[in-house]
Length: 370
Image (tube, rainbow, N blue to C red):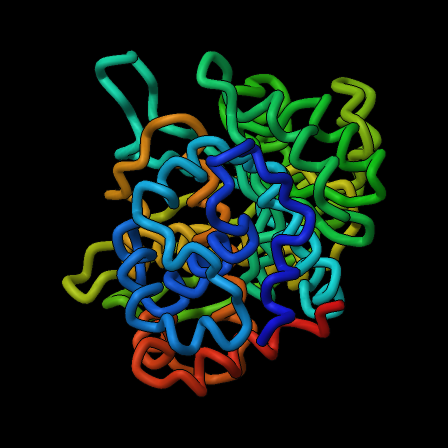
């Protein structure tokens, strides 16, 4: 298990002098192991250290004993989140063959990370998520005085999107964003709403009432669950020369539409239509699957972080603590996801807490660490 310490090998220690009473890699490793066994706070990390100390000493020196919760707290306030994130990026590289062909991009606010006294807003993160593997690829912090749009190119600099389709909501339907994705060798599927008024109007008009000469591809899928029946019809059109003449959109190769018809158990019905800009020329089935997979970032990342890891209620708010602990949570979640056991994430954490062998097995399956 000594190799687990190298997960954080690229993280630089921001402390100096007597503040370095505890080895940086050992402190971070205890924090990660604590989260893999259901820990949520710095107090949980200290408690984990004392309970598991005999085992930890098998591969750690712990020269000055178990770090206190204040040590964990101070360290996460001082650390550079980008240094911690290198562990996430290396993990993604090692598991590249599992990541799939869709990278979903979406923002998440750590709602309890605000501080009224200093008028600090909650930490806002923009994340890239491999929808097929359900692994977080990278994240960047959004400037409190800005929004997600200028943060996306920074995120793209961290993630290898070559050969993948980047999906994002309507906020990111920007020419600069489209150009940046294409320049990185990726494709895009960008939702189109009222922020691109005339462009959306032209796309909607064409797909809702297509001319006789239009060549449209369609695919329908029916799903049941959560007390409803949903019929999704995906339509895609590769003839966009007329649209490029009017709007000159970077890399545009197709436009698409998804109509979702829902029928609830009480007989209530609703219809929702969404429109998309595409840089690839997919068939209708693949287009529908790509759009559908975008929502994995909500269901398989945000929901799990809030329900199983209590992220929305985490009260870390000073320095870089909120952003750093967010990276460790996603690293723990990625490691749990890589294990082939079919338990839920919560049950995996509880099983690791109760059975040391399972925790060891999760760590050993991450990758072959140098």
